[in-house]
Image (tube, rainbow, N blue to C red; front, side, top):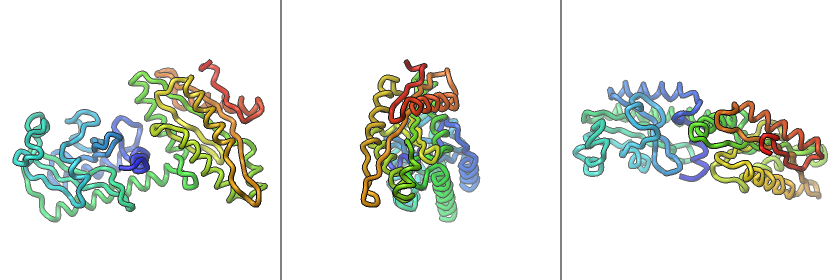
Length: 324
């Protein structure tokens, strides 16, 4: 699964422990459990490890957080719904701890979750502790429900992703930051936010036209991504305003990353109307220490540092005083 597909899954799907509204997904899994008359029905999602991990649905409480069912790895590789009528009689699974012990799983039916462009995100599956053979109608109904899961994920992706640049929208970014804040708080890690405002961007639109301005915005996001880690996130929070989230990064390192972003943006050159459109950026950096701040407080502190950068002449990085 490629990085773009993982980013899609992260920004649009239900994730364990995140401040995300999973009502639609829970409704689908409850319906799947009813249709199949099974004790459990769950959505599993492919994570960075490549393994599908349980994310939402009735019966998920019987498993450890982020646990992977042994069947789902096979189901995501399949082009069709995968049926395991009796796992204890299947040599692929009969020695698995979830089959031989624990909940003693017997039955599994899983349907791959695939987007319209063919990316596999995980599975919708039903599981039970009794063996059974589903009917063709039941298999088709679960496939239809899997399509509903993907549709919901695609709708969320549209609302959480900026159409022009591919960065997260303000709403999408704040959701991701809040989820990451909770994770980092539990683990005792700091979280750094980098607020970016392009200097005198209106002059680019006025001189070169809005098409050139749009191209420059896309280029800014691309050059930022090239300078960031895979786990870092960028959101577009205004017309020419962006915020970058740097999880588990010390303040001293985050300051260097912010300076690297500033230089990369200043070196951009886009041909436009016989000339080259270019831009600089004012950047503010703030850290969200475990248990010390809310997401909104940290965003505000990054913005205050950003406006200090503008007041000091623009095209510079200013750190929140708490980082000094």
